Amino acid sequence: MGMSPISNDQALFGTSIPGTSVKDTLNDLKSQRKTLQEQMQKTGAGELQSKITSLDKRIGNLEKRVNKVTGEEECQTSKNRKYKDGSDDPGVSFKTSQKITGDVGVAVRGHEQEHVVRERAAAARENKEVVSQSVRIKSGICPECGKPYCAGGETVTVTKDKPENKFKVGIPAPHEMCNVLNKSI
Image 1 (cartoon, rainbow, N blue to C red):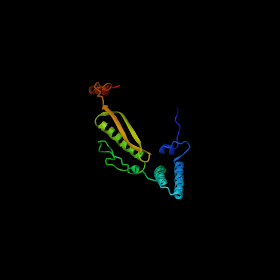
Image 2 (image 1 turned 90 degrees about the vertical axis):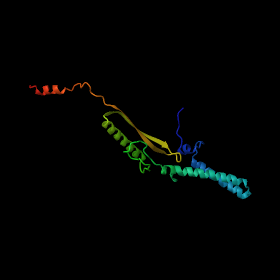
Image 3 (image 1 turned 180 degrees about the vertical axis):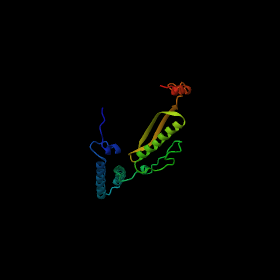
Image 4 (image 1 turned 45 degrees about the horizontal axis):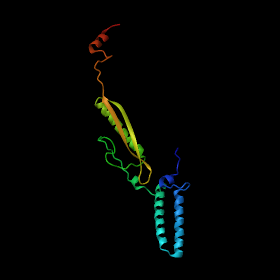
């Protein structure tokens, strides 16, 4: 069985009635509230007030969620998100937690590239060979607004000791070098 796409409203708000959206549901709830208010004015029944209060809560919650999705209300979790390097490398950026303005993915990739360069340099200093390096950019979904975000990165470097050329194959010994240079043609 294949998957079929659903509208953003259904995905974000869990409405399962085919062909309806959150805005349709919201308009329907407002219509129900108006009808109940008119009935309450005619009859003066107190039990209708509790139904109206319940509808007001549902309408308020749905309006909040619609505002978050449409961008009319700013998500506080996303707004206050900070990034910090968790490695023991003192020479890279983000050693203290800080907010990133602009494209977070670009900043994280740049930071991970700092790790790549520093690990290669450390391997060269220690007379090691870099076997492999990989960078993984992590992503997540904001629990408050449901939008995807860059959740950090990870660089993995594998090195090994450089093999010593014990037999010096193909390299003439120093005394042989003198003989080669002194031969005349």
